[in-house]
Length: 78
Image (tube, one colour):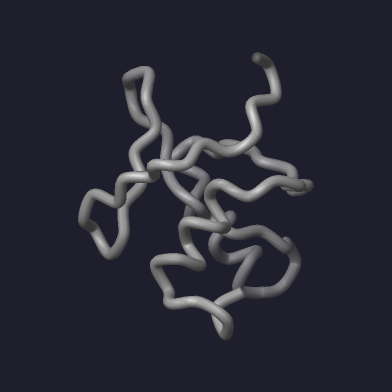
């Protein structure tokens, strides 16, 4: 995907494309160092993609800056 598009477009496709078959889970902040260690030791295959915050929206960032997503992905519960 990255070899066919610039980094920002690849990011947009990844955020809005379909067929997402990864298990998502949350971890309390006090356990993140243990999770990071398990990932580094290759005992856990996971990728940290964000953090949970109070509120009711999703915010996407690109290198710390707001990264608006105009296209919506598949709506599973519409």
